[in-house]
Image 1 (spheres, rainbow, N blue to C red):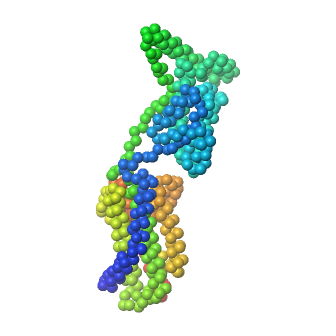
Image 2: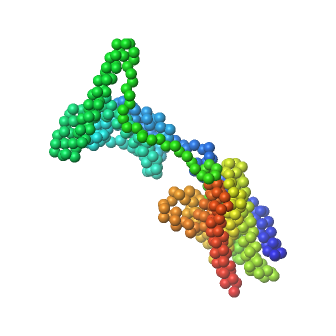
Image 3: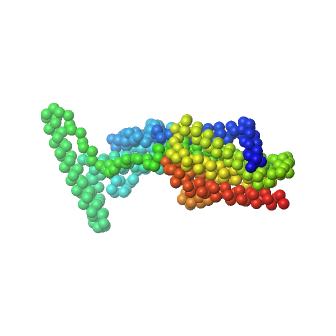
Length: 437
């Protein structure tokens, strides 16, 4: 134990005195976590930013103006009035994600095609190819406004949908196709309804004019959204904080980089002969490897705790379970130390080992959901990443922060981290013993 404690103490002193390594492993993840956290929602008080949409208003009819007004009133959109040339130029140069063109005569043509399905007008939409998600959102909001305004224009007392000419054409079609008879009857009834409403409003206007009063406003008639949504963000703990996930992801990434440095350090010691002098001392190989693993785990846990202290003080991240967090930090630190030993055991040279280990670490971090949340992955990728230790590490830290789970909620991630630590450490120990013989 005396030799083990001395080896651990030596590694800790060397690491603390290496200011560059300390800055890289502590300051860099805090900076990157702050950046990614702001991208993915920030704190619980953060509001979703509006989508900037260019609008080319060429239809000056009442329907066209109402569609534009509805888009401008939508709380999810910021509408920028542009000419057609300006809209195309901004989208083409990436200054705007989506632009919508309401062509001349669109409102009347859409009302005429609502039931007939003929001569449907086109609604040009320009979009940045890298913003296909924005396109889908804007098209959904656009559909709502167009259907509401178009149906009102078609079914109102002044609607142009059910003219006598259109009804005559539809009756002629229904004579040859009985399937269109119900539509003919429906539109005939709608025409009677429109005529009755027009007569009633004409009477009201005449009465108001005779009494010297303003004419009453037309009551809106048309399709509207038959529901509203009540958005509730649910978790068993504090409100979602984007910084909590980003600190977990960046912490996992840079602590694994520290594990790489630990493994490369052993390879450098082998190259300079320091490793052989250690083994020549009256200490066993197991003691030397254990000292490296314990010191590496202590450094990793200290870094993770320091990072989350910054997250709590600066970005208001809340830890719902201190025992759960410490359990996750300890198990992940042990896995990182074992990973460093694995790199040292199979690395031929420091340069080659660093390159291969960095590539492997970046792949694990990417698949583990450290850069972007794992729920955005395809379903099969989400299942496949369960064999990656970083996935369990990130999910575990998420569980004891913004998800609000306790120690029982992270027992499985802790067990998985410890299992990987045993596997990595066992393989590394076997390789070191084999090379020593």
